[in-house]
Image (cartoon, rainbow, N blue to C red):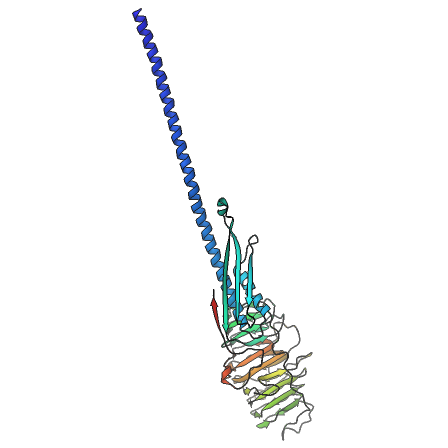
Length: 477
C-alpha cells in the first residue's frame, strides 16, 4: 500500500508541475503580446506627428515657392505697365491690359487653381499697382482640416516724368513692319521703339542687325534669329493710336517756279537743279531733282512736293534750317542717294512746327523714286528699293542711302509711307532728337539710325503726342 501511495503522489505532483509550467508559459506569452501592442500604439502616435511635420514642411515649401513666383510676376507686370505709362499715347485701359497679361504670362495659374489680378492705374498715369490673390491647395493640410491657404502679393511702379516715343510703325498686321537686316542698327537713346503690327513677326531682326532702346514693344511678336534686341522686345503690347493723326496739314498752293536759269523748262515735269542755288518755300509740282555737284540751300518755310519726288543724287548737297517737307500725290516720295550730303532741321513754329517731314495720308498707286533713275557719275541705273516683307496697304517710299545725312532734326511723320534706310554710315546721329512715326520702317545694309532724345538741346518743339521729358521708373511692394 505504501508503494502504491508513493507512486500516486508522484503522479499527482507531476500533473500539478506540468499544469504550473503550462500556465506559466501561457502567462509569459500573454505578457509578451501585451508588450508588442503597446509598442505598436506608441509607433502609431509618433508616426502621426512625424507625418504632420513632413507634410507640413512640404506644404510650407510649396507656399513659399508659389508666393515667390507670384511676387516675381507682379513685379515684372508693374514694370511692364510702368514702361507703358511712359508712352504719351498710352491709355489707362492699355496699361491695365499689358500689366495683367504680363503677370499671367510669368505665373500661369493652374486650371483648378485660378487667381485674381487687380490692376489700378493712377488717373494722371504716374503709377500702376497690381495685386494677386490665389488660394493655394495644400497636399497634406487636408489631414488637419486645412485644405488651402490664401497667398497675396502686390507691387507698385511709379513714373517720375515720361518717356519719349521715338519710333512707331503704324502698319496693323504686316510682317516686318519694323525690319532690320544685315548689319543695320537703330540706337534709340532714352526713348522707346514700338510696332503696332499684330503679326507674329511684326518686328524682324536678321543677320547681325541690332536695336537698342529703353523699351522695345511689339503688338504682335518678333523674329530675331541672329539679331540682338536690347532689351528683348515685349510682345502682345497694346496698339497705340496714331499720336499725330489730328495734326493739321499745311496748305498746298499754286505751282512755284525755280529761280533762273532753272525755270526754263515747262512746269509739266520734274524740275531739275544741277548748280548751286538758294530756294524759296513753295509748292514744287512734279517733284524736284538735285544732281551733279549742286549745293542747294533752302530758306526757312514749308516745301510741298506735289505729284513728284524729292531726289538728291550724285554728289549734290541739300541743307535747310527751319524747313518742313510735305508730300502730296501718288508719285511723291523721297530719295537721298549714297554720295549726297543732307542736313535738315524742322521748323520751330507754324503749321509744321517740329515736323521735318509729313505727307498726305492717302495713296493708291505709289511710284518708287528710284525707278529708272540713272546716276550721272557712273551711268548706272540705281537699284530699285527692296520690297517689304509684307504690307496692308500701298505706301509711298522715302529712301535714304546717303552716307552723310547726319542731321535730320525733328519728327518724320509718314502715316502712308515706308521709311527705307540702306546707307553704310550713321544717319541722324548729330541731331538733338529724331522721332519717326511711319507705316513701316525698314533698314538694310549697315546704317545706324540714331533716334536721340536730347529734347532740351534744341528749340525745335516735339509735336504733342510723342511724349514729354524722359522719366525714371521706381518700384515698391
